[in-house]
Length: 229
Image 1 (tube, helix red, strand yellow):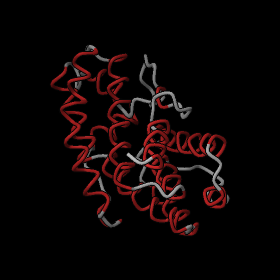
Image 2 (cartoon, one colour; image 1 turned 90 degrees about the horizontal axis):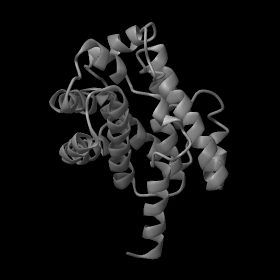
Image 3 (cartoon, one colour; image 1 turned 45 degrees about the vertical axis):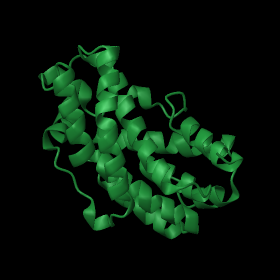
Image 4 (cartoon, helix red, strand yellow; image 1 turned 120 degrees about the horizontal axis):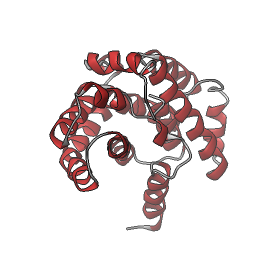
């Protein structure tokens, strides 16, 4: 593999690793309430729940938004990015999920600008001064750095699933071996989702995970909780 491609792969791995300072560990994306309600109780139910979130919920939307943000970032189109960010934030169905995406997005952009200085990304950041959706931040950064879109979208999807599996290990009766099997089972679906999202237009945005959305409201007043969403 050429050195440039190797460096790009390492950068992408760093950006989407659990150790990147975006605070992803603090969010369960409604999973904590799903465990409380009994929707997620074992390996099979967690696999099904995650599969729905990926294919019919926020991950599909995130990948479409990240793909469009990548194109705008690569073109240096700050106006398009600002409009895309407004749309992404408006798609968050609850206060907690809005906080989840906007806090991670802002943290990601700040950390990336600090560790990987990039003139084009710095210029785009001036157009994104307030709350920033996480997929828009990741897509814009990757585009500004001229990274290939396909691997970025697939890696974003994998990081999303891995973070929720990690949350399940803390909140649900699922062990590490089961968590690893779930990630392996969902990986082929993530590749297909990323490929579809890369060519989808914004009219394709939409989700159908109504119980998750309602659960994210109920989580706000859940008696015992360890996650922010």
